[in-house]
Image 1: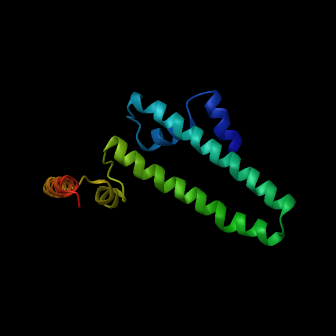
Image 2: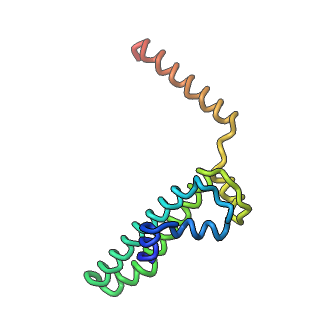
Image 3: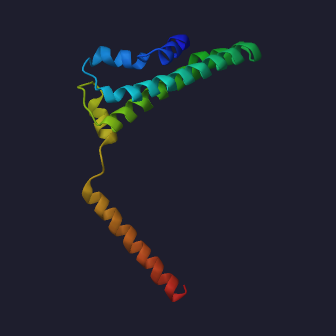
Length: 138
C-alpha cells in the first residue's frame, strides 16, 4: 500500500482521487488538490506504520509486535479515517446521501444563533463586571 500511495503522488491522479471518482464520477476539479493532500497524509501515516512494525519486530518482544499490529495500528488508521471524514464533511459542507450523513450533520452543524447571542451577552456582562471590580480596587 505504501508503494501504491507513493506512486500515485509521483504520477497522478492520486489514489484517493481515483477512489473518490469511483463513487462520484462528477467530482469537481477543485477538489483534486485536497484529495492529493489526503493521499500524502495517508502515505506519511503508512510510512510511520511500517517503521513502527519494523521497530517492534526488531527491538521488541512478540507481545509488543502483536499489540502494535493487532491494536495500535488499527486505532491509528481508524482515527485518521474518522477525522478525515468529519473534516471533509465540514470543509465541503456537502451531503452525498451516505449512511453517515445524519451523524455528521449532527456533529458539524453550527451552533444555534440564539445560543451565540446568549454566550456573547454573558461574556460581555462578565467583562463589564471585571472592569467595575478593577476600577473599584477590589
